[in-house]
Picture 1 (cartoon, rainbow, N blue to C red):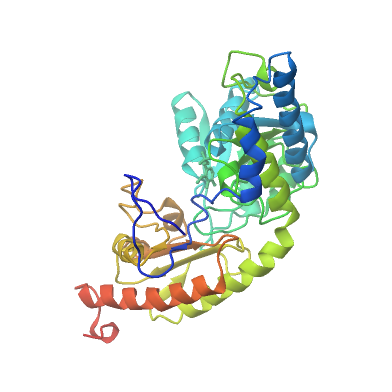
Picture 2 (picture 1 turned 45 degrees about the horizontal axis):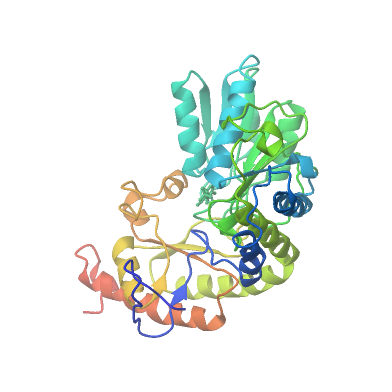
Amino acid sequence: MAIHNCEGESVTIENKAVYMDNSATTPVRKEVVEAMLPYMTENFGNPSSIYEIGKTSKHAIDRARKKAADALGAEENEIYFTSGGTESDNWAIKGIAFANQNKGKHIITSSIEHHAVLHTCAWLEGQGFEVTYLPVDKYGMVSPDELRKAIRDDTILISIMFANNEIGTIQPVKEIGKIAKENQIYFHTDAVQAIGHVPIDVKKLNIDLLSLSGHKFEGPKGCGVLYIRKGVKIESLLHGGAQERKRRAGTENVPGIVGLGKAIELATAEIEESNRTLLKLRERLIKELLKIPKTHLNGHPTQRLANNVNVTFEYIEGESLLLLLNAKGIFASTGSACNSTSLEPSHVLTACGVPHEIIHGSLRLSLGRMNTSEDVDRVLEVVPEIVQKLRNMSPLTPKEYRTL
Ligand code: PLP
């Protein structure tokens, strides 16, 4: 992998770089880049224009919409292209809240959602809505019984993610969908991390709204999907032109949409094959990392995404671990405080009951199609060494876990 710093200079890293942060983002797949390129060059027309190059763009969007619909078991007119997961989550939750407030102002979500859901719910609380944040068990699993108990006469929406971005836990979505349907409550799921790893059929799972983001499945950044079941009553967020059947204004990101279409087609066709490979890599990583003393697995042992490894090492700081891994050309992430975007320790690990001092030593390795068993070898060679080095430096490490 060629690495460049923020000035665009290439950076020399000993050994081959290992990228294991695919839940943060993925490289855009070659076939996807190739599909997108013509829509940034000769086929640059505005899809709303009636002349030929406009129509070419419009047809390309139609084809991408069909691919996204097929990937979800949806109909084409239930697919809306957005700017990504954040917009899709905002639209689903605010859109349902404002269109259905005559029925009630109560929303149910979980305490481990992505901030795109949690901060949207918090904002709605400021607008007079009430939100119940369901707890999770130590594996990050929502309980269908707790959900049933939380339902009230004025509940208008249940928003529970398909799979968690930090710990990979896959929720009992089918059961949640069934409960929502029995109680005539809309069910939204953030499937940003699940697509391409778990087969999804929105009709069989009783999902009314579902969010996706292109850059998590080897598609482009800045492009996403909101699936809205036909008949769902929802307000628009963006007003202006008549794009997306008058529900989401703004000139379409044609290359992005084309890329997302290609990426979702490939990712969903290859789920079985890709999971077979990823599971082997994941299981070896987990088995070997857990051999490091005072190391714990976060998330569910089996109901988890095939690409997710999340462990905590006691007595160390995740940020120091990441920096030392970075120096060795290994790119990963942590739920520690002071990670690149937050000053708070992971709300997900906190909700799972992981003590704060241990959360600081968490490491997420998220695998992708590009990872090989050599990458796993490299991680398993480097991580134990660095963990030991940091433990030797920490005043908190008991004597028996030091080597110096
Ligand atoms: N939801 C989940 C579960 C995510 O992991 C992410 C991104 O990390 C998002 C939503 C936001 O997606 P986007 O980056 O496309 O705005």
